[in-house]
Amino acid sequence: DNIPWREDASNLETGYLRNRIRLELLPMMNRFSDTATGKICRAAELIALDNETLNDRAARKFSDVSRGWFIDADELQTEPEAIRTRVLRLWWREQGPALKERSLNAGQTEAMDRLLFLTAGRVNLPGDRYAVRSGRYLFLQGKQATSQEQVRISGKETVFGAFRLTESPS
Image (cartoon, rainbow, N blue to C red; front, side):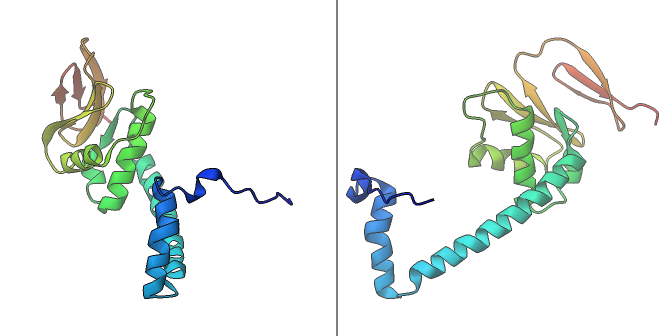
């Protein structure tokens, strides 16, 4: 494990943001308080712990609300925003198209989150996909759908695009 130190030639170039932060911003902050860097590091550790807890809780909620290409929006909307947005991103990663960049940007995630609180609506997403809110559910749909398909779930009948969701006996 004795790997010799190697100085990268670009480490002193302030054209890179990471270097400007290390070479200019952190020293300036430490002039105001000699504990600034330590406090920033501790805050980052606490944020990482919080993030881990939120991700674990979101994964459990995702299991509760996900039904493949649709999720129970009414159930998800009862959660705090930090959980809702993580669940929506998990859903997209699992059900979204196989794009080079699979992540949703913040605006797309926020738009889907707002859709949870409507009874109907649509949000455009990458890869010619969109999220549709109809009834209590949020559906992931592609623009290429053309055939009429019947899917049975419990709840009222819901029709959107090429899909019809109908109540079935339990």
